[in-house]
Image 1: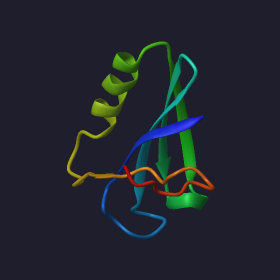
Image 2: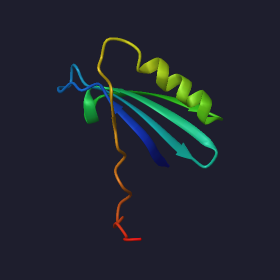
Image 3: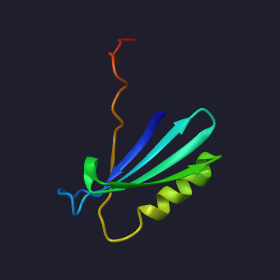
Image 4: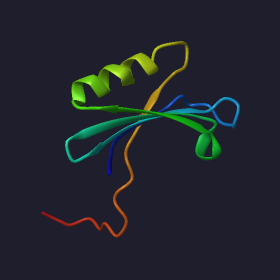
Length: 83
């Protein structure tokens, strides 16, 4: 499974932190909504198309939080190459 995008609400601490992840695996798309950081509680959504998954992401990012898009981490063992 490949992480494509990650959003964070900019708040620290288990009670305030929220994350939303967009992931892909073959022809399936997954959205994870997490409350409470790495040790928190997650809710998962699965979709056939990226458009459907992105629609859910847009809905989850609504509200008063100031969401920030974070870059996904490179895969384990990844090293940069020069052109």
